[in-house]
Structures are given as C-alpha cells and as structure tokens.
Length: 193
Image (cartoon, rainbow, N blue to C red; front, side, top):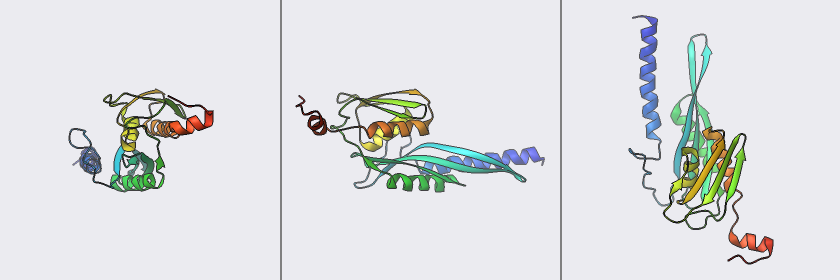
C-alpha cells in the first residue's frame, strides 16, 4: 500500500471518529431542535470547534479548540473556550469554564427590555426586543447565547466580522448593558409608562 493511500485511510478513520465525538456533546436533537432540559440542569451549546494542525517531523499533530455557551434558560448564561488534543476534552474544558463565567441577564418576560449594542473586535451586534411569538431571529452564534439565557423573542443584527467567537463575545457585551425598568426610572428620576 502506498503512503498516500495510508494517509487517506487514516484521515478517513480520524474524520469518522471526530464526527462521532462531536455529535455526542450537542445540545440539539437529530433535526436541530433543543433537547428537553431537566430541572436544575444547565444546557450547553457547542458554537464552534476548530482544528489546528502543527507540522512535526512525523507528520501533522492535530489539536482542537471548542467554544461552548452554557445557560440555565432563566437569565444566567456563560461562555467558555477550551483546547485539547481530542474533541471531548476540549468541549468539557470549555463547558467548565462557561459554568465558572456565568453572568445574570435582565429579562423582560421572554424578551429583553430595551435595545442594546455590543462590540468585540470587528464584530458588532444589535439586540432588539420583539413581541411575543416572534421567536429568536438571529444567526447561529447569537442564537446560541439567546437560547441559553432563556430569551425566546428577540430580533438581532450582526455587522462586521462573522467569526462565531467574536460574535458570542459581542453578544455578551450587549447583554451586560441590559438594565431593568426600575433602575432606569431611578437613575433618570422619571416614571416610565
């Protein structure tokens, strides 16, 4: 057997193995719908898995980096970034970091209370409140954060970079700016209708 054939066989087997491992950790069912969440359990959503290859004397050495968004669906959400030589350990590291970095988000029912903008690097995200039944109108990275936080009705628009990691960080920057109505009334010393 030639060296090229051996390399293709190894790559094919490794690809099958990686696809199987990625599928295990997903928070979505077979058709993309979220799985049922057990009370008190945190939902995790894998936003991005990157593969990096280091060329060494014996060939290429692959490593993986995973970005995971973790949330309880009731206003607490966090993100984590983990790196390892295999996919499952990188996802597990990212999940643990996401649990440690959780922040509380101010919700107004199933949506947000006012318009906010977030920026991170070249990524720019605008979040707008939506009427009940509108759903989550967002790209995959922003949608992962909104669903993990428990936001069910929201309109979003992203500008600039479409890098999922930057978009998640920009979305978190926007969500941290949310204030409840009572705080705005107190700061402005007015009564809002």
